[in-house]
Image (cartoon, rainbow over all chains, first blue to last red; front, side):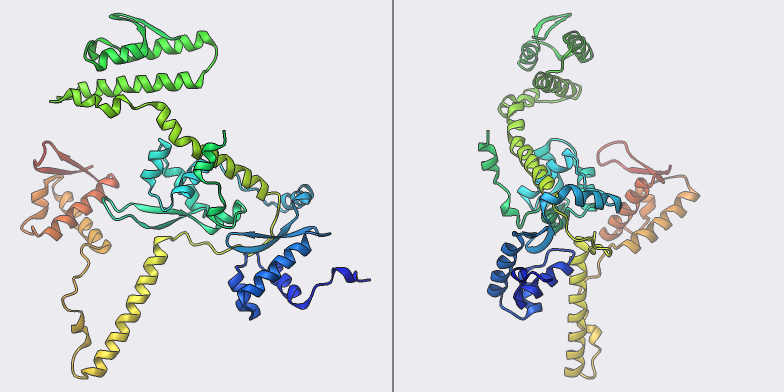
Length: 180
Length: 246
């Protein structure tokens, strides 16, 4: 028998279907276009759905990489991870050097490789290549000047992987410096 | 505290650096390999690896190495080597500058761990990923230009039915050199070097001395050098360049 208190209004149900069917975060604007509604209404519906999922559900609606996504609740992590590892899925592992290089790019973007190396005081070509290969950073043009070096930026995939909505969600360098 | 006992000097390493940098001691009198040997012996005896101390040691020895390397070259102003800025080049400043980024990396690590506790739905197709970066932008420009070209061609043929619309592009310079030209020039150079194993750059140019051709030849030679096909030697600054098959 259906549990009446869990039923959603039609708008929320459509929204739920859209988020479920998308393997990547869906931007509010895109949902608005699909549902032929204005952004404000969609924003309101999304927050309502997010609230709904926080009660008695094994899923969560989260905001990341400039969009919204349905993910499993963190408290069920252990059991879902078992399933995922049985399916042969591996966790993305990022080395310390790669994380530090990513941090330098994230806080200084757009940035050239020599600027990254100036901050890190070590050569970063291989790390940057790896980050490019994994789609965590991208080439965002060239700096005008000697050699016209490539400029690097973090990608939406970076935001997705780290579960942040935008780069401004990260603490500032000043805030990090104060944290002693 | 690590102290050096060597011929001509006895005392801490920073004092040695100061004496050398102030000119009171000659670089030639100090053997860096001996200092490194003494330090590794000292560390082995100590049976621990104090990171800050090692960092300090590396900083001081790299200053010595830097100075020693410079002393090998004829330098009119050796005193410029230790300018005000460099004297005040503390490791702490470099470490201090980098410290917030290390914290940021730790913060990213935490975020990643937190994020990895939540799983999105599996997509069998996988997200499309273009490792193109610049190419995407170039593609956009290219299609934009093509569209503009076709539009103008159409407009011109409507406005001046008798004229050739291609004339409109007269005066627009051709991109020189482009990849195809470099490759065909490389082929030419290979043929020339097959006949004679060693040639000067001037021989390679012949009477074609336009700027574009010189650039094209240089690019082709650099590419061949990268592929280890040729050896390029210039014995003196502004001297003739000799190219030989590798």
